[in-house]
Length: 144
Length: 146
Image 1 (cartoon, each protein chain N blue to C red):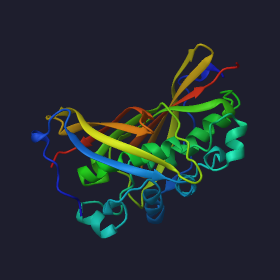
Image 2 (image 1 turned 30 degrees about the vertical axis):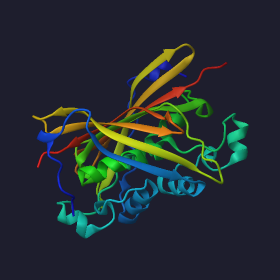
Image 3 (image 1 turned 180 degrees about the vertical axis):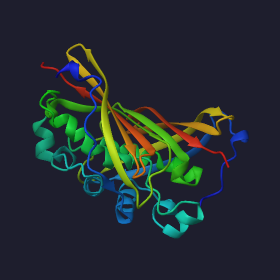
Image 4 (image 1 turned 180 degrees about the horizontal axis):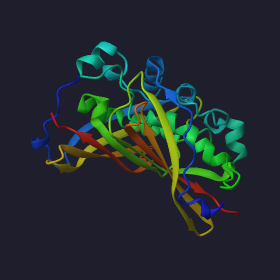
């Protein structure tokens, strides 16, 4: 069942609507590789990552993009309400084998289009206090 | 790479049938918890015919079209020099289990900047009736020789 629908007319630009914290481990990367079909070995093999000059095994950018929108999905109450979602991949996320990587997400209202029934939610997505996604925006339909 | 491929439209990729278990598997992999992506009863209660894929699921359907672009000798893209720059999904309607989706890639733009090339690949995804479902747009940065 869909969660309660957030009311567009009481939202304020800049308002925090959702946040979250996600711990990525190598298991997460293997799971995403299988689910998505992206088996690029830089996402699970240290030797391959090192051979192409990377700081270590990296999270799939699309995994970071995929999890970052989840707090917004939960706020909106239905994944179908996210009608548009875009990001820029600005910084890689190395996932250390023993401790993993913690990604934090803060979602705030970026703009409101009352006539279209759409709120633009801007995401700040960070790893070790550095932003890893740029211009991360989800447009969410809140029309009843 | 070859800048002349701007505007090229590739043949449609083979149809992709969206399975319920694939939606659940993908949803777990992106840390989704919303029951509408897992439980058909919850999805139906929200007005959908079956479980709804997470917003980035369209990348799975788009992938076959990007593979076409990267494998095209005329495009001349060196796969080992490709970095994913930007990604965007614009939905006309959500993807639900049971959909049969067909994606067609258009090279929407090619820009060259200081030895690097930026290719904007736009994959338009339609359902079995030919109706637009989602457009997945990737900007790929192809690093030049250093």
